[in-house]
Image (tube, rainbow over all chains, first blue to last red; front, side, top):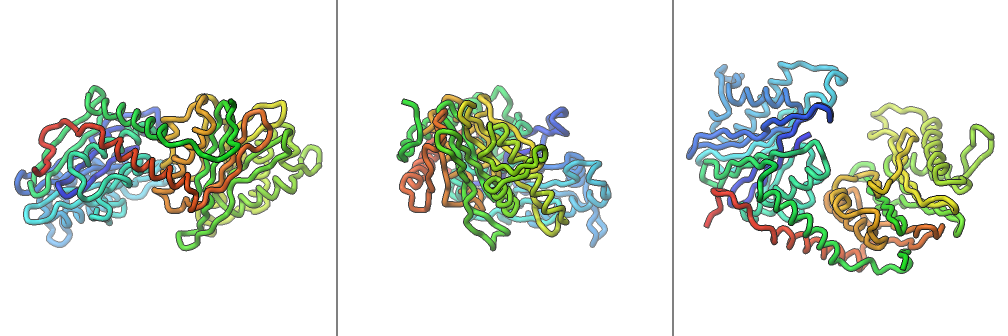
Length: 252
Length: 252
């Protein structure tokens, strides 16, 4: 399993991805799922993937090495796309191309099939900073000011904190913090999401990466965040008065 | 969708169930999913169900009206079972009986199929207070002191708070409070889980219901709990220091 989240606020974009892959709980490995494509000052994109690792790696290879444009016959890479919208279309075409190349396999041969989903965020100079979620079918949706974050993979455990706290005007550093809390909730409840965590920020209109960092098991800040969050949740429910209903049935 | 949770602590058992059913988001209704079976002082059981409503109602009817015992040829009701283990087996047999009666239908005819899962908790005088989760296949698992709660339906959103805070020695009233927080998280993130909430407590060794209550939209305590929890979460993440990493990319 995988958990990746992209948060698009007015100051910029945060992308977070875990690195655990598994083919059954007896076959666990670490793979980078967050990849940066950049020509600093001109174009910057972050791509995160969840789902079938073979398909993810093939899409990544096409993004780097190029995919034939059916109309012009030319081979284009992701960074040659003139806009983020064109880049999202490129990723969609790459997903479909991989599915075509791999052909169809019986469901039994590949539990979970060749399903994949990707987050693509970034900015091309002159355009807006944008965040897309590309589905297995190659179509995509975009984050908006109403819903400023998108998730792929094991998204449910980490969604409540985002639903409650992330909005367009959240500061970029706070969005990163909330993303890490969301990641912590997911890691606690699903063993197949695990450290290290890769993260990147893309400040709006900078057209380059702000921060690119890997959080490992020895990261003091993340360790502290997990402890503080856990303690604060304990205090939060302790501070809520007990239900006033009669006859709950305590022993005195 | 549905969310039901049972929490078994040393003082007793809490059972919580929402009441929303839906066949698509354009067909939503309210049905009681938590049912009490009791001969006060002798036997008490609480049954909650998630999944196909027709199957749930048929299982409930068999529990009330009786199911033939293949060995003796006699028709028995749930309350005639001599132990909680026998009661869990009864529910398993009832699920299989309904599946046999309804036969198999093409997947297309019934999205989600005839899947169902049930929580059965309670006590028979002379036995232990126990909590079971009965699967669609009719087999079941039991809550233990290591994992003192069981969930059915939309379980992920509300699981983190239980994972963090519920343990065997949690007071019964606090277990109820934590169950309500878990329900709140689920309702916020999944529209198909909704008010009213039915709840019941069964104090250990009382062999009768402690509290049986329905929380509607006008329940002052639940309203207050939701507000306090939301504010406390906001404060909790605000109190965590921002990530110390350089170059996150704030605008100053």
